[in-house]
Amino acid sequence: MAHIAHLFNNTTLSGGLSYFDYEYQVAQEIVIPWLNRHIDLRGKSVGDFGCHQGGILQAFRELAHIRSGRGYDLNADSIRNSPFIENASFSLNVGDILALSPESNPEHRFDVILIRDVLEHIPDYTGVLIKAYTCLNPGGHLFISFPPYYSPFGGHQQLADNWAKLMPYLHYLPESLLFNLVQLSDNNYMHAKDSEADMRSVRTTRLTLTKTEKGLQRAGLQLVNRNCFLLRPEFKIRYGLPSLSCDMIGHIPILKEVLTMGVYYLAQKPAQ
Image (cartoon, rainbow, N blue to C red; front, side, top):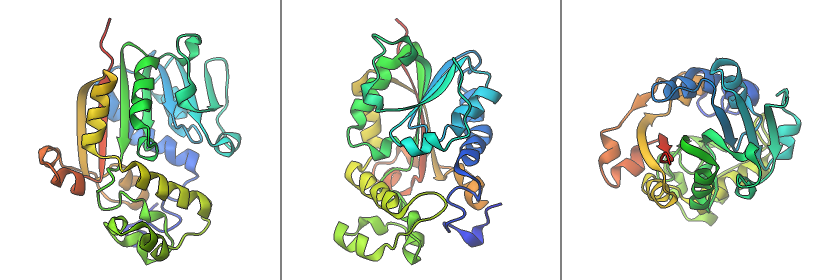
């Protein structure tokens, strides 16, 4: 198990598990129970936008008793190396979620869409939210989770393999200085070049709670629930830390952006 003494080391970025098993455990212990408090997942069709290896979808398949599931990711290697077993109702697909066409392909329509720890990497996050709206069936739900950019580790500096990984708010530094200080190398989670691309993408996007909520509004999605965390629930699996909610802080401008280390959103497409 992960331990606080090894905070952010290369073996605990995924709790010492394979990334597929880490995703599965996150869904099993965190995402499915959280969603079950708000919606009934049984018999639903689920789209996982940014599925990586499909461990989340596998847990939904086995534990949430969904009817069907499609995962989409741009990283062909992640899908190629996944132990996920496909059939007519469940698949992982290499492709851009912005290219999905629910008007012509019924497989691109879902009752529930997951965008877990993905949206903060996409500069056109509003476009993704609009696409999610078009891919949802009337009355369908969208789940989003991510670490806000201005939070202590919103720059993803935990991917470093030197002292920089333990420095909150380090990503506030100018870009040239930041990447001179951060040392990156291959680990059991990703290659050094992918870690750098990861950090640069969140820096470009700079996704905040305020931006996300405005994006949901522009997309025509109604906010059903928001849960802010001082300590993300995933930290229990990675580092042995307890989850710590901070919903009261989530209503205080500026403070909510710099202290909230993770947020869960549930939004809904209006029934027609």
